[in-house]
Length: 202
Image (cartoon, rainbow, N blue to C red):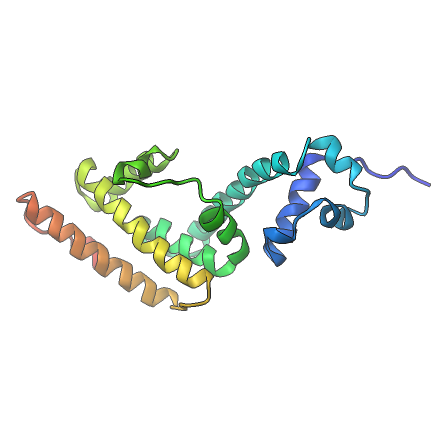
């Protein structure tokens, strides 16, 4: 008989991803992983000291899966650049509900006591800077608008993931454009800048 293939971390993480996508992370344990891999639980604890260590590594693995999802969404959907983040985020909640629940509800690594806490999370500052350039506002205003856009989008995504909301992409795009147009107009008027944001309306 040929020797059984060696169980690797990649195989374990891919299996956990498969279980999570189908039935939720609550169904992940050493036995369910071993059952999928058709092995004993021993190789799992050869790769990982315990399930907590496996989960920590899996969260990074799953977040990379989310990043790849956004890139695929960018290529497959015709969407204006400043709406890529909110629309792909909401669509991920709809299509990958169990992963969304894990990454962005139950294990979301974000504790906000004040607005600036949002920008302590890695990558958000850079995203806000790029967003500011896309919509034509200064970085300080852009950070405020980007945070509010995240909170607005997150609320829609959570309602979508919990089955309380189901809008088609056209409605979502119009809602987000209207939200941004009104917000940017307000911010520009506060700053004494003439309103010229036709690019957000088309």
